[in-house]
Length: 167
Figure (tube, rainbow, N blue to C red):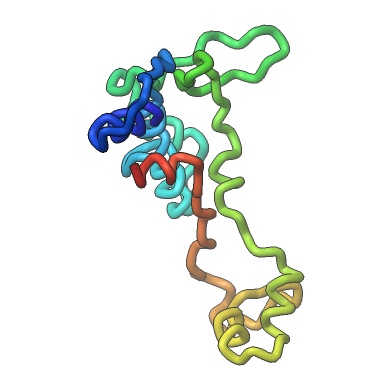
């Protein structure tokens, strides 16, 4: 990220002493955020009701293991530590990650109390949007039998590297 900024200074003719930060983080940022990066795959897997932590792990390995130098197999865990499914080479070294529970955490469901407030509020548009959501009261499914229903929207990811993409 800083390498790109310094190159921009050079192009613009800004008087600047080049600083070697020792490692360009662009590859790591791309591994995490590019269209088929870790966050994109997490968001995609969150859309499928039958997706599991194992399918998420396999998709990560299929897309990145051996293809990105920043994505590696983790070392065996030390005694008392959880087993990791992947390792990412960051600026500070190789960091192991356990992906168990990432899909569930990413679903980011609405609290039923909040939904009830929306359903019984004074804004008709908000009431209409949430009329089919069960909330605390349950039922209210309009005779649909509780089947179907869309997936809960996954949480969006906004990271520091949004600045990187602007450069």
